[in-house]
Image (cartoon, rainbow over all chains, first blue to last red; front, side, top):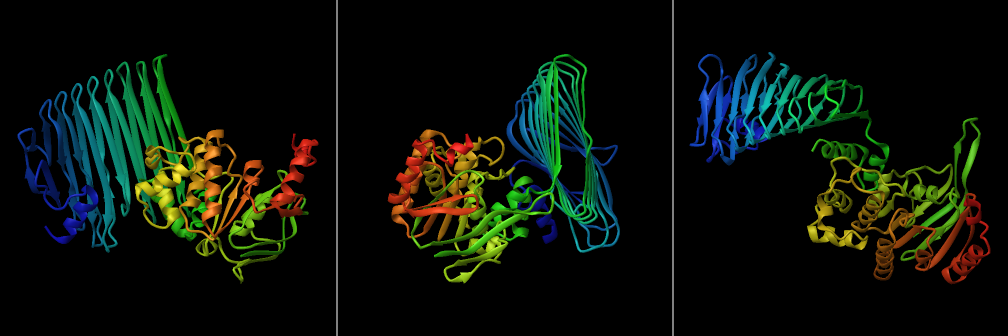
Length: 306
Length: 243
């Protein structure tokens, strides 16, 4: 690994090189760079297409699994299919993420198709950070697809963060929840320059007592464009809450097109959305601490996207 | 020392007519003074505080701080000179913890115990507050107290509090009065409090009454306070208007 690789890994997965404990799979420029399974977490390469199967044994708790992807070649289009099978009663943290360093003039793209099969009573925390950098003019594109199937009383917390430098992204997140299952999705997104981002989220609550919370916060700067399509469908007595908050700056454009659907009289589905500039009083308050307007803006955005 | 010389402020109404808010204010606040500004709502007290902090610009007059003309100085430059202002209606910040806000006010990361001491001074005892976000999950009174704590966390030469008592429960108010009392005793810095509360007025070295954009009267607490109390008991010609 080179310095660029180490820096990308640190940024997207908070890793200092290859982990000394736990299962991991590091993918670089379309190939496995290093892989390690443990007794409880098996990482097996797929034979029919690029990607891996990650199998977490039932009842395993407290393990972390790192599966970062880094791309440093210009012009590379990397598509990968990863399937996660989380055994009954397991409790694990999965840290994914993709970093692109594009120093050339051709487009570098990574499409991660992730499917999670979370068994009864299992708990998963899934963290995914996306980041782009590089002095080249080539685009940095990330189009993740995440499908989550939550069994009875399963729980999933998904945190997706797009830090900066991603020219274009089209995110698709889908979840289906059985009885008593619970999902929380926290999405943080920042776009700048002429970047575009689209995020489609669809949560289907099929089971009685299931619940979903989607919290999306975004900042659009410069000429960037963002579109959000959050959708929650309640097919049983359930609760869903969707909250989209965006800060718009400069000449950016943001659309938030929510959809909520209830097919059961006891389904409680709520949506809140707001798009607006940074509040002037917030800026003034921080300026009374001695910050310039620009410094105050940065502090507000940093807190908002934390 | 702060000197306000012939300070006036007006805004344009919908018919493009000038509407006077403050008219020819002359006021000197010496170092170490504890000054309470009182008077009816809409009289121009908050505007005066906002002019001193630089949140508004005067239409006429000068603001002199420690001998320098700061009339045209931006807000952050005035802050660096040691002027601070606690908002009457403080803004809320999504994602900003109380600890972070206090640290930003202080200018560097504050250790837990120091954060707690500022929070205790405003009647928020719990360490739990440090990691709470200053957003809509906090009540109006809590946000207001945190706002006051942000001024305490700074090293200021002139601290201006705009109706610090508003929205604060009685128990916390007692704590707040004690904190202002302590500040008054051990600090050479000037404190200006805009307030309607007698217990805060009783702490003042001097009381200034502002009504209809002008200084109606000013003087030592011993002189002004009994007069104001007399007005209240007689049906009060300025409070009476509000009710």
